[in-house]
Image 1 (cartoon, helix red, strand yellow):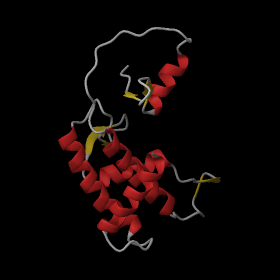
Image 2 (cartoon, rainbow, N blue to C red):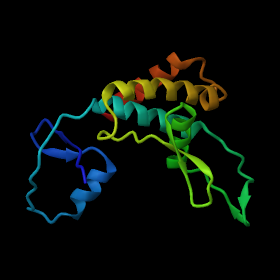
Image 3 (spheres, rainbow, N blue to C red):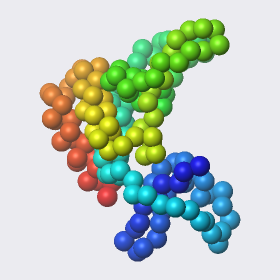
Image 4 (cartoon, rainbow, N blue to C red):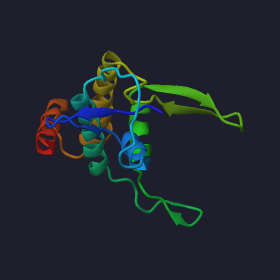
Length: 157
């Protein structure tokens, strides 16, 4: 498993994603780790992508009367994120056991995507999210969405 850490001003290393946080949470206090390190792509840009997904997800209002076998269907952030990535054109076609072709979103993890590719994905996802969700939510253009994202990221720091 790969661990993603960030150095704090105090010099401590802290997890930057849920997978890394989960892994570290399982270790006993005082447990040492050994490993090789490499610099990850721009963490702030990664956060900007997920702020975009959250902004769009919060604005998205699916038909709340949908049901499946009598169960209400709820919106799901991970499914939304993957669907927007697929709509942006970043997917892998796979086949399931019934012989049906499905589209799986490309992984956005630090380990699976270089910075240049991530920039392409961000631009395409921004367009897909604006066209499919944020335009109807009242955003004038993609530049306005980017300004809102920058404001949101300033509040996180």
